Length: 116
Length: 401
Image (tube, rainbow over all chains, first blue to last red; front, side, top):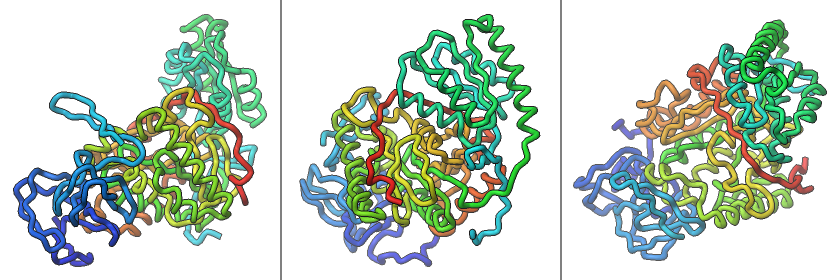
């Protein structure tokens, strides 16, 4: 990972995480974070449960079930479960307010839809 | 006058537009003529590109698309390949091409001695046309004569923070210099309609933009799927709204000058949204079944090339117009370097800024317009797809200036 000296980084947040807009309640990963890593998110120390990939996102603050998930300063869906700080935010805990999201699971080749 | 020092040259066409390539296009007018058309193209794949429409039932949209594509500024001559009994109106298509001043011939397989006779006659015609096209003289061309499209395909969580906003910067610069820029896929702007409407040059156009996205949302809702592929989720995107916000960044910051439908050619420079979702009830299935359908529709509206942002790693190119591939994801760029023209993933690693990558895209647009081959051209990609749709004409608010 390169140095981040020319970028405004919150000292209390891991430099691999970017906030796209001040209103957001999620942060985007610009590099992989491995399961078991202890990182700092908005001043809170959290242990990452499972590997989270580049381009994925995690919660920068606690998000309650049914609360809007905000990225780019805009709502990108609603939480389907309570989400804690530092937890992976994805199709297992948020849903679209428009149409369901399609995903494929490699292990059993099944296709699932999370319902809107 | 454009401030950038450039040395572009183009091929002058009778409608005043200029081409950045001078190709023969071979068009099959039903799937039954596909094999013969492909064999005709085979010996001259670089100078002759294959396009076609597979259906035997007539369709006004497909007819219009083929008329616009066969008279695209990058095309210098056209060979139509018919089986002979299909419903496609080859007579009208041929008339439109003739009126554009381009050489055109129609091989009808049922009259030309079947497969071998048609292939032989077609290959002979193509060879003659290529010889003629090589004698064409180019004329100077400026940035305000360029038309550029953009799409994103195989998006992931990096697309919306690197490649797409970098294309937005390049678009802003192109529009400042008078170029025509087109972005599209209203089904991937769901959730962005209000902020987008504020950029319209008139309030009426703003309302038309909102209506086009609502139409897309309702269309996709009836189909039961959003414009969202399984790989988008694997790449970190969770919902269509999230994908949309990232896709929207491709449009940059310029005012939106108009809303067009496939085949409408903007009369002057500026930024245009293309409404790709059919009008009326859901009839022919998914609006665009894969990325190339969108490229084809933007070419029908005159784009000279397409800026294609990809996070997961699409490798496609296109018949007729070059495709510039912009890698949003630095990990993917390392795996697919030979398919990618620009590495916007450097932004994530602090190795480049959005402005730097935007300028790099702008410079590459000029290079490709000046004759340099894009990676997909070098790899021989000439994908093409055209399916059934139906559209109503544009409303009065759509092109205010």
